[in-house]
Structure formats: C-alpha cells, structure tokens
Length: 150
Image 1 (cartoon, rainbow, N blue to C red):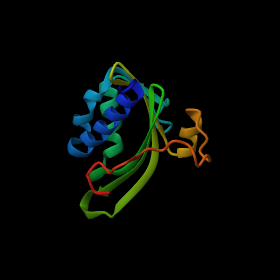
Image 2: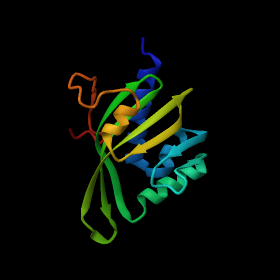
Image 3: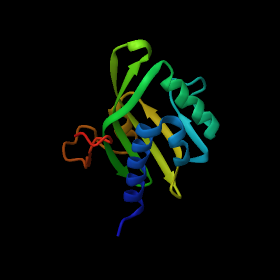
Image 4: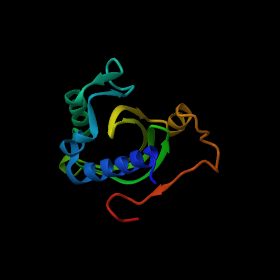
C-alpha cells in the first residue's frame, strides 16, 4: 500500500516532468487555488493564489529561452516533499547555459500543493523540515532525471 507521503512524492515527480514538458501552464494544475508561495526574493516574501503563482513562475523564467530540471532528489517528510534540484537555463539570444542548484519544500493537501517555499541554501531547507543535512544516513531517494537521461 502506498501512503500519502509516497503519493506526494509521485505528485512531485509528475510536477517536475510537467514543468519540463510544458513550462508554467503545465504545472498550475498541481497547485491549490489558494496556494501560498514564499520566496525570500519576492517583495513582501510571499504571494497567494494561482494567478500570483503564475506571475512568480513567469518572473523566474524571464530572460530564458529554455529551462529544464535535469536531475533532482525528492525526499518525502510527512505531508511535504523536499526537492533538491539541478535546473538548467539557457538565456535568450544564445546566452550561455547556467545551472542552479536550489531547494523547494512543498506542502500537500488532498493531492494539491498548498504551500511552496523556495530556498537558495539546500541545508536550510533540510533543517527547516527537521532533517540533519550532515547526516549521511538520511533517506535520500535518488530520482532519475525527468528527461530520462541519468
């Protein structure tokens, strides 16, 4: 039997695949109507609702021709999933590709993401959900890269 944490883990994996296949519009369905997004780079820190989420995603992707999550670790913790991602973006006009390694903590309720917290510091994300980032024995299920390469 698959428990809620495993269901959330599968939803997270589907979210990443949907993002890689279709970008912003493809992922909105994974979020609750009243989702709260917290990003320390946002004015005021957070926004609420799907349309505000769309704006955050569009802002994050502005100036890029292509953005893909090529690899990630996903760790279920209760009703949350921590995503440690390796995202690659190619800038507009042939600008060089850049890699971003960051973390996302998503809280799920009834099959939807109700809270999304972005972290630049992966250790901070792990600590915030009660995991020791230095614990080599901490569960770290390896997820294949969403594009099937790796």
